[in-house]
Image (cartoon, rainbow, N blue to C red; front, side, top):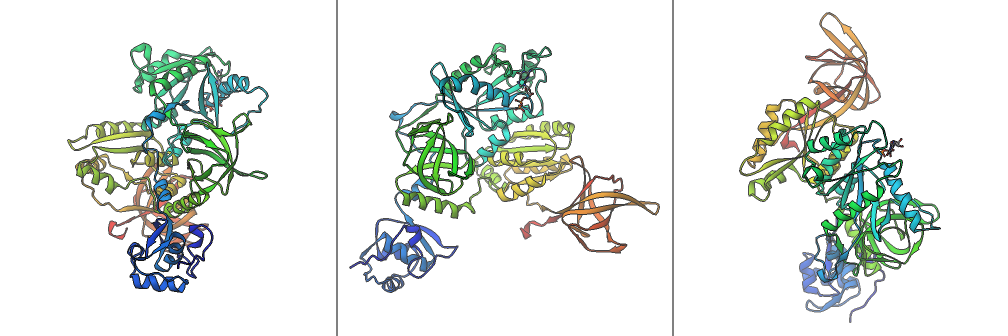
Length: 603
Ligand code: GDP
């Protein structure tokens, strides 16, 4: 009675009955068989219309008769829907990190370690030192290769290191939902002490709730002062063990390769305390560390298996790419048949290039892999991991959350301290401010990633934003509020802690111009002779004068001219003269950021 006329996978065949699914067609999970009546309900159509559509496809079925998945999938595009298998794919699409593990199956797994610290403090040298002493020993004859992560062994226990040091990569991965790291090694050069990026690294590791082991590096240097490092650490709230705290600090010299064993031993201790376990007897889940297109091998993804075991032949979905594992290659360049938890592997056989931070998941069939990958692709647009201020404050209002997480960037250290001190004292019964990170300077991409990963709001005080950061903030939906008066900031934050958000005008940057010359006009005012570098300059807008990333002034444009003529707008690539209402101390090299306020109603 039921004629099957459609071949191929659900996703492909969905367009078959002469109706192509529109880009806006919605996905609907369908079981192996479904009655016409039930299907009509699911796609919000009348059973009669559905039966007509079936007839057009050559299938006669009554309202209480069942049709199979393929047939159903073929006709529902006419109603604006596309089918996915109900049982596995849509369930599998959910992030399974929180999925219940079979406790009886859990086994100890190696820790995954990331190295953080200030530039030039020896992160790369330390990674190399660890790799040299151990990996070569173990894999005699194997050619160690760079696959984004490697595994070493100490006293029969494995430890996995991620190869990209620094908190930028660490937090970018976290922002994409990949919490790959179990332990952070904070490298501090003993001759240099704690530097701004050391503090950033500490904040990023804390935001990720990852334990920190300190490697006090460069102790071979005569000017090394490990005690000063310990004191400085205490100043950051990291009290080392010998002073009664719980932070392990290991003196090392990455260059002379001393103290490395001691560091590895301590990493194992911390891993043991953290009780890191995974179930190797289940389909693999993992995270992509890096991916590249290889001329001869096609897409190659370096990944870290987090739980389960990945085998050659497994069907995979990685982000929105799918495939079947053709080969697995270890960090020692060896072919592997399978990769257990915490193992870094190169995967061959994907049909596209995934992104670093993408979640990898082994599934039972090609069809399932494809369906999930496509569903993800469709969902991608709508998914934001960041939260809007309205959502955060809404949660405080309902009592669901007792914290307002913020990342603070300010022009100078002085105002930063003042803001920090004021904000921590603002807590009400309803909620407290949690400062995820506070530093001076412009808002960077890393700040945006940190805000996404920590569901935080960014507060900018008298500071600007790097262009890349602005684009990222917009695409990730991160909320940024700029202030130039502490009082206004405090007032707003206070309101947020009470569960109130004042809808504020949104600051829209229209463009930038570089000051090329400063021209004195008459007695009073100076004209900034500018070249518009991006966007446009508007007469009816405000200008922030930026010098070395600091905001010197913010106020309205008084006049905008091209060749002595007043104009309303000047586009990128053109020159113009700008006069500001109450500022004329321009210098060559200043950047003028043109912005205007977009009222909340117009959002
Ligand atoms: P990174 O920017 O943190 O990755 O730092 P690098 O690993 O590139 O090291 C920066 C510089 O410090 C290089 O010139 C290294 O040779 C040097 N260096 C790293 N570790 C040590 C050490 O233990 N002792 C000494 N004397 N120099 C070191």
